[in-house]
Image (cartoon, rainbow over all chains, first blue to last red; front, side, top):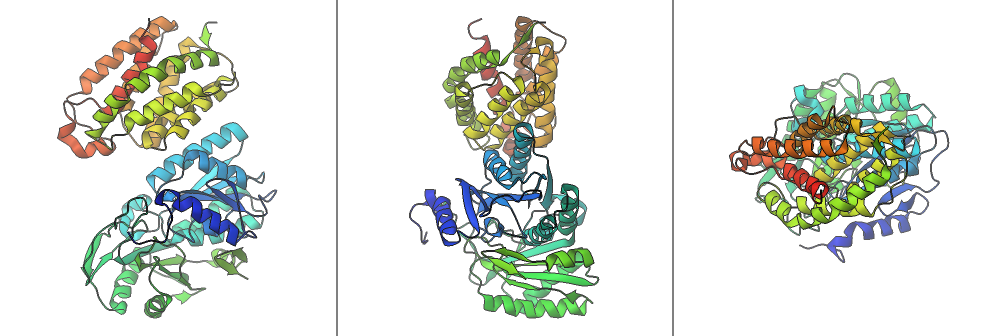
Amino acid sequence: MKKILNDPASYVDEMLVGLTAAHPEYYVQPERRVIARAGGATAGKVGIVTGGGSGHLPVFTGYVGTGLLDACAIGDVFASPSAEEMAGAMRAAHGGAGILRLYGNYGGDVMNFDMAGEMVEMEDDIASTTVLLADDVVSAPPEEAEKRRGTGGLVYAYKIAGAKAEEKADLAEVTRIAQKTADACRSIGMALTPCTVPQAGKPTFEIGESEMEMGMGMHGEPGIWRDQLKPADAIVDEMMERLMADKAPAGRVSIMVNSLGATPAEELYIMYARAKTRLEAAGAEIVMPLVGRYATSMEMTGATITLCHLDAELEALLKAPCDCAFWRVG
Amino acid sequence: MSGFTAADLAAAAARIAPVAAASADELNALDGQLGDGDLGITVSKGWAEAAAAELPADLGQAFLALAKAFQRASSSSFGTLVATGFMAAAKATKGREEAGWDEVGALLSAARDAMMARGKGALGDKSVLDVLDAAAEAASGKAEPGAILSAVDQATDQALEAFRDRPNRLGRARMFGERSQGLDDPGMRAFRRILDGLVADR
């Protein structure tokens, strides 16, 4: 294992020390594994809480900020936080108007977050709702869409639901918008190399020089199928065809071309150029494209593409102001 | 009315904890044949935390403290499931300092249902749910603690016997299919050991 670290066991805790030290204007750490907004919870605003394993920055923790999330519970690399840590994040986010739990559809996270919801309801009388992102189209067929895992669509859901909450909309309304955004997102991923989880010390899979994994998630897992490496346009064509077959673009769409960690911006822009051509050929109009590192998988080489199908309501919220250490709009 | 209080829960946890600790190796070994081999750690650490927990007089808050003890001890899915069971009991007893012995059957049923919903498990899959189901049925309609305990004791043995030769269909153990036939389900065995703590000195 070749990594810049001191001790695999303290990898996440040392990362959090640095994150909060570098950006004290955005983040505070009220508990060991909870990051909240520097200004604390906003009175009268629905709190939006997320959580999940480390290894994905800026997701999940990075998106705590104005117009985005209120707090985040942080697990070890690719591991769920505990229910107590999630309950801690919910308390830190509580401004008296209830909590939306907004996170990716992974078994361990769902069990623990449901438990956390019961705990804060019982102890603190905090009402909460859940919206799960299940946007990865290759992880289950359309008829079992509720079993899909959550990936890049999380970023759109944080942004759009976060903007709605900032308007002081009530919990039911923020939940409705978050679900509408989750339903509007479709993602797919591909990878050229695996990653190494610090505490495991070994790459998550092996792959030949001339091969690529298609249908990757964001936990270093192998993809759904393996193929010979192809030119960028052919890779993007296959990804776009699968995304558009799952939900045809009709009107305005935002697209995210996201690096899984090690893929440089240059290659993302090569991909974006092709994706734009394909989307426009299908009759879509692109709104606010996002190209960069949004939801990573440690140091994997590879990329994900997410489409967020917009209507006027979602588009206005997507363009509303937000501010965190990793993303500013307006 | 005859019933139980948070002090009874604390006394039960104190009796179960040493028995759970003594069965840690046995449960780890059994779990190691079908899963990741840490069930004994979850069960012994969970009951140690439960026995050490300060239990408030409100029964709902006391059950909640037990749920949190298990959650603290282990974020494994078994720890979360046990916590879920205690949470179901917490909801049913919130705001009361005493619950009737005749409610034990209903509390076990509530725990079973909540654990089924959270773990997406079904009865008949050969899991801790099956033994809880048998225990709930055995306890229902009874209002005397001694009668409840001996009925649950018997029903637990019968459930272990009835499921031993069937394949596991839930969790990681289901991937071992036939290899799980002839072995007790580790979660069911864990329930047996917990009960051992309660019947030990009777």
